Image 1 (cartoon, rainbow, N blue to C red):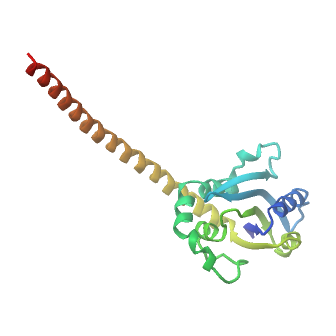
Image 2 (image 1 turned 45 degrees about the vertical axis):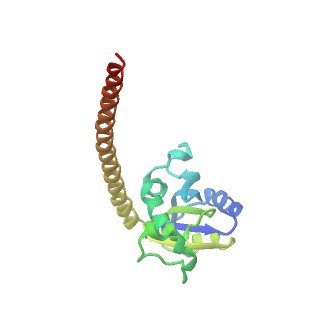
Image 3 (image 1 turned 135 degrees about the horizontal axis):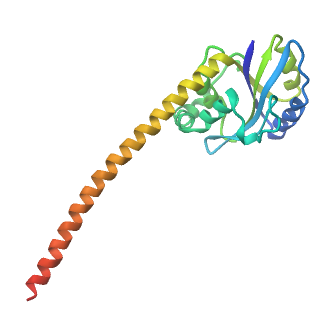
Length: 204
């Protein structure tokens, strides 16, 4: 199965250590890693810190695409920020295992579990045996979640459309407000001019 895996680290430096270790991962018939990224939540926004695309290692990390790049783009955009502000404060009350999130909404789950200051590793991997990647991560103190990669791709696509609609609606509203403001401002200016010349006329 192709999965998106997110591991949240208790210690930031360990996220980079595991990133370096997984960069050297040798694929076999059962396990392959396609994309790998380190992110950190700062000021309620998910920031990409480092990344590797195993299909194009020459690509600059900031230009990572595919499912992982699309997911980080959504998490760091207005949708992720809005959801983060709305439910992030509830994260302290969350309980239970974080190892199986297949039935949860990915964006809500990430924004709930990934708290401000947290560092996480996000992978796109094909796994016939989850214990292979878990064995690497088990060397560190992490909370790990998995989602079906196809479901994530569909959710990212949907969120992207919602985000585009949000931009379009905001732009439309801003244009409408700008026109109304200019009309009001124009009326005020006209009244001020009229009053100015009326005062001047009265001085004759």
